[in-house]
Image (tube, rainbow, N blue to C red; front, side, top):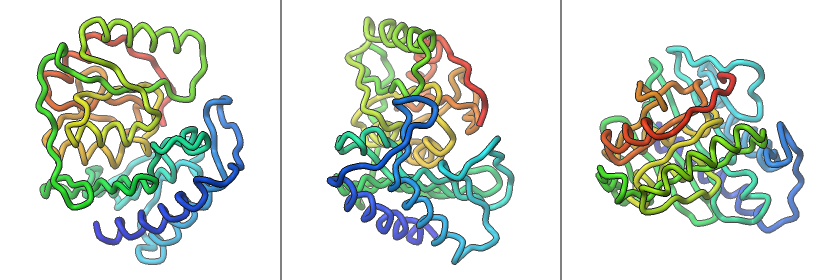
Amino acid sequence: MLDFAKNIAKEAGSLIASAFDQPPHYHEKVSFADLVTDTDKQVEDLVMSRILETYPDHKIIAEESASGRSILTSDPTWIVDPIDGTSNFVSKFPFCAVCIGFYKEKQAQFAVVYNPICDQMFYAERGKGAFMNGRGLRVSHCTELHNALILTDWGGDRNASNLDTKAANIRRLISEARGVRTMGSAALHMCQVAAGQGDVFFEFGIHCWDYAAASLIVTEAGGYCCNVDGGPVDLMARHCVAASSKQLAEMICQKIVPISYPRD
């Protein structure tokens, strides 16, 4: 099934890549910084149709077709983000990806995150490790904040109070860390952690489809994922910490001020 998901991601990636240099057609969702494009919808339709052609009884949670609360049951469920980093896609910034995660009994079984602009395919299967284009991935195992490169993002929320809290969190961390980077794709940031190209990622306001696939890639690369309170990952909680080590994740959780968003 992992190869099936990788093939779908490649096909979806071709749609994204062919549209990347074309004038974008997009609409605003909750703010002028939260966008959806025609390509998002085309990619989601493609991925969903391919899944249902082969697995008609499986459930799908997908970004553009989601309405109301998303509920993850024990049934076989695919969680899909057609383009994570849509604002990057619109702005021709090559940091965006199609994300496909497969869950059964509420546990991730395999996952694919594919950036077609850079032709980087990250994938993992439970108990079998994480890879990028066939090369095994391992986290950095950084355990000290002063050695850490922190990855995060602002998200599409432009509420002034929430932005102030996010800015204060970054200010608090940068005084003790090696650096902070924000690049606009939660999934790809988490894959960077898996690849040892960053040490910890956190974000508030993200959705289940942003990190359902990438969280497995992090843990299969030897990393650690949790809620911002240090508890197990809750896909519908709209926040996540992904780190190279449990120790570093706990340090981040202790230093950031949480922001509450409505559950998915």
